[in-house]
Amino acid sequence: MIEMHDVYKKYPNGVMAVSGLNIKINQGEFVYIVGPSGAGKSTFIKLVYREEKPTAGTITVNGVNLSKIKNKRIPYFRRQIGVVFQDFKLLPTLTVYENVAFALEVIEQDPPAIRKRVMEVLGQVGLTNKARMLPSELSGGEQQRVSIARSIVNMPKVVIADEPTGNLDPETSWDIMKILEDINVTGTTVVMATHNREIVNASKHRVIAIEDGKVVRDEQQGGYGYED
Ligand SMILES: Nc1ncnc2c1ncn2[C@@H]1O[C@H](COP(=O)(O)OP(=O)(O)OP(=O)(O)O)[C@@H](O)[C@H]1O
Ligand SMILES: [Mg+2]
Image 1 (cartoon, rainbow, N blue to C red):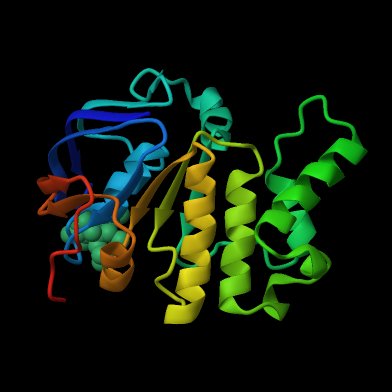
Image 2 (tube, rainbow, N blue to C red):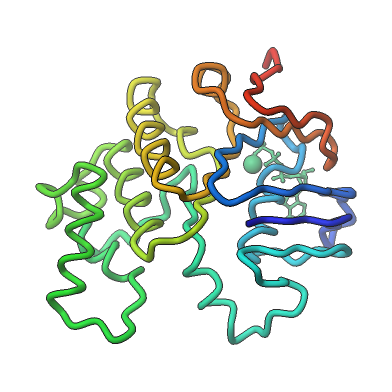
């Protein structure tokens, strides 16, 4: 599903954020990416959805070689990947319903089909009754649920999340994890960068630890392993 081969990323300011990554993530896996601040976790995530280009190396996502992808194909490629951020990134002037519908790839879908799909995913994240509200009228956890609904509306094979619980209290964080676990159980690959030790230690999945842009640990059913 995601394959990186000798991937390096040097930012224009000279910082080498990722330094020789070799990672293979298979369809259906749930993977935590852990590591200290500045280790390169977000850079890894950005490389996967082609927000950043590697300085060297090969990245293949969902069968697409990202070195060869044409610029005009990038929006199409991104719609095949669900992305969830710490700060939700919802469009503030659109309702919950509209935020999700906006992300839906509308190819040969009639309006009733669009409505059905949007309401389906809002049901999946427990927000059917908030469809007409604006993001500013929702709690942080609810906003994150909208952003997860948006990320899965096109039925992506992989959802990548960069600290999705970073802005949420512990209880709300568990609700978000339950939704991500449910998504994974249906066969969707989930890759999540996190600093949340309790979550990583409680729901055992593969853990890839990155330090200084390199993989220092890769364990099935691993633990968080840091004291920070
Ligand atoms: N756009 C950028 N331009 C220059 N340097 C950057 C940029 N983004 C990140 N960096 C640098 O690259 C390194 C890795 O950053 P990255 O954001 O990937 O770390 P991270 O593991 O996600 O950290 P955190 O846990 O704090 O989110 C850091 O040294 C950071 O300062
Ligand atoms: Mg980060």
